[in-house]
Length: 433
Image 1 (tube, rainbow, N blue to C red):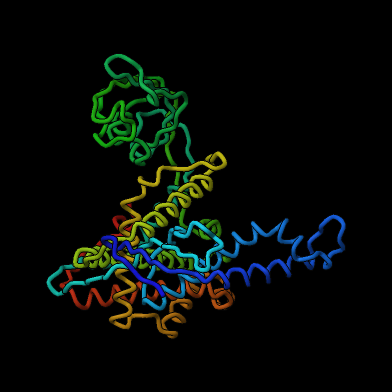
Image 2 (image 1 turned 180 degrees about the horizontal axis):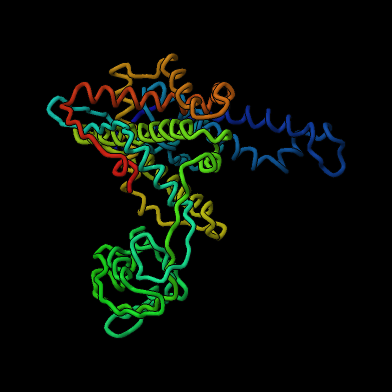
């Protein structure tokens, strides 16, 4: 027999008991199994008396059985009371005498919230659209040419896209600041690797000349000491080099992976690659926009257990990402999980909203949709059939594709039900440049 109390919000407490006989029977069974291999001085394996096993192992086995029985009893009671448990329960033994006929306990836990998804008919969702043009392909080829430019010294003032070798030193109120000084530093005006005011100040200066200029750092600049402040830079130009771009010919095509040097084939491949990447980004942007609408119209409480678990997962993911970028992460290093609380809350909410929506609107992934998405992904590889088999061979990978299809179905449902505002975007905006 069990009872359930509501402690407030999503928190519940289940009160139940376990018959002592059940625990003792399982303890005896485990001790007998242990006796088959246990090494006890003075006895051969398998010949150790039960009383001796109880003396040596009884306490630890009893604790183990009690813990397992609590978990099992709680799970059975949760099913009997139709409880959707979120996270793990905290157990408390109420009986002081563990040899009593009944072991009474309580388990405090959270349940999944009721998810109320409002009417999206009055909401407006922005739908990003993109159409690839010949100009986009030409611009991409131009970028590829610039990446393969050869620089040669010139005796003239620096121009945009030149490569300039300089020494510079910056001061704030007459005092040098961290990160404001460098020797033999390469700057390409117009490339956007430095702040625009810094790059622009170098234009018009020749090798051997010096220049002093003032500039103001953006208010959101990562260097807090100089963010939003005016500083003075002094620079010495050592060398100005002009770029020579490769011709779009067979050699250029071969350098980009087209074995036969066919320029037309190169342009086709570039067009296909841009198109695939652009559509992927369009899908991501539209998914984000649709999810924002769902968050806006939905009402639900967030279980603390799920929030803590997701914050921990995001923290571990961040540390792994830092390590993959070459940073040395001390063993056991932790980051404050409250830093991830906002992201974690949003992700947990969306997970609960999507689960409810998929169930109510029958938006789960269909086999033909999964197969179509696998084929779509496979087309960007040299041997698409092998990639397709790789996805189908592992249930985990297949489940990842199913989740992506599910998200696509949810986005389509939102777009069909809400007011849609189409937003055509250009390639450079889509690619974030």
